[in-house]
Structures are given as C-alpha cells and as structure tokens.
Image (cartoon, rainbow, N blue to C red; front, side):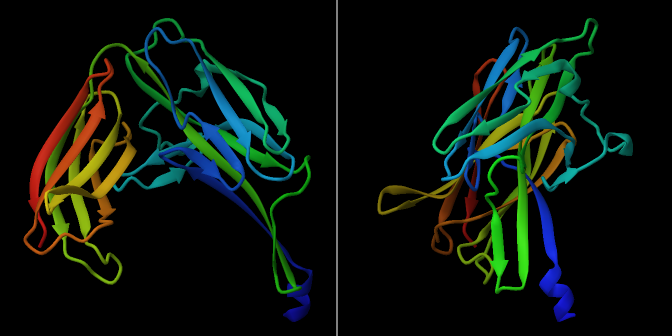
Amino acid sequence: MNGLMNKSVALFFLILSLASPQSFAELEVFPHRIVFEPGKRSAEVILKNTGTSTASYRMGWNDIVYDSNLNAKQIDEDEGLRKTPAASSMIRFAPRQVVIAPGESQSVRMRLRRPKDISSGEYRSHFLFQEESDALPRKKVTSGSAVQVVLKVGMTIPLVVRIGKGQPELAIKHAQVQPPTSRYPHGLLVMELERSGDYGLYMDTTLAFKDNGDTINAIHAKGRGLYTDTNQYKVRLALRESPESGQPLQLTLSYAQRNGEIREINTPLQMP
C-alpha cells in the first residue's frame, strides 16, 4: 500500500459556478454573468491573472442545471435534464485560448447571432474557463513526500439570452428564522420562493434589525440566480449577526426587472 501511495499522482478537475464577483485562486473574471437582452449583440469578458506565474486558459461551454435547492449539477446534453434551452449555439467568441502573464489581463469578445423565428423565452449556457497545462505548472500540493496532488481548475459564468417580452415575478410562500445551533451560531433563514414567468432573475436578500437605533444587517446576500430550470426554490441563508430573542426583523428581497426597474418584497419576521 505504501509503495502504491509513493508512486501515485491524483488529478482533480474543479468546476466552479459562482454568483458574485468571480474569482478562483489566481484568476479573476469580470463580469460575473452575461445577459443578452433584445437589442444587445456583443459582450466582453475580462480575465485577470492575479498570481505570480504565467497561466493558460481555454474557453468553452459547460452544461449546468439547478434544482429547487439551488444546487448546481453538471450534465451531458443528451441526458434530457435540461429544461432551459442552451444559448451556446448562438454565441461566437474569440480568442479560444489565452496565456496571461502575472498581473496582466486578457479580454474575450462575444457576439450573438439570433436565429430567425426563434421562440420567445430564456436560453442559458455556462461559459467555461479551464486551466491548461501548456503554461508553467502552477497548482501543485504535496502531502508529506509521498503523494502529489495536481489541481486542474476551471470556473464558469452564466450566459443568458432573452427573446421576446415579459417580466419575471417573485413571491415568498414561506419564510422563518430558525434559532441558533452549533452549525448556525447566529440562526438560519429558511425561505420557500416561487418565480413565475419565462425569465430568470437575480435576487438580493437582506435581513435587518435595529440595535440602539442603528440598522444591522444579519444577512446581506447579492446576486442569487433564480433560473428557469424550476419555479419553486428553497433557500437557506446563515445569519452573520445575532439578534436577541423576540427581536423584530425585516426581510427584503429585491431584483431588477428587464426594464431596469427594481422590485422589492418586504416581510416582517421575528427572531425565535
């Protein structure tokens, strides 16, 4: 067994799909999502190498779906699990691979070609940045002197194409704060949400309370994607501050509609 361990090399491939400003290790990507509304034809993504070694990345596509608990799952196109049609076939991008020196940035240009007679609704794919090994090796982790682990990492950002008119709508079906536990020492917000319409949205969540006249945010979470893979969502967010038992709380969900108008949903809660 020890002889086997001394010779072994483990290879891991990580795909991250994050909601707010995108970064992993020494790669930063901006913006953290791309949305093509009607009339928009092009976009640009900026990659920045914040590390100390030259890095190479290849761009492509990844198929990801979300369940009602907002868990991401990577799928194959032929699995039949996709409920939101793909956007990747409508997008042309260049370059397809970049080598970025430390501290430098590289842009990836995208152009949308909408097919004629395309049906109204939302189309989504996830744009992939995958680290390649044709630059200097960067991510090697050793455990003692026996096992070497090489991390080949990637990350994705959602790319959405919206066709036609219509607005997303959001409703709170149930919301409550659960008391502190060893896992959630400040408490836990549990929400059941319902989205309606043919389009997704990006939700900000704030849970606030008053302390000696000051407003304290126990939760301030931005940019949670509620996509068209499902209409029902179960969201769990840990509190970062500790309101007193019986303390009145104000829950606010806000999201931008397609015309830029900000919608807010306000619900009073109480700390158990």
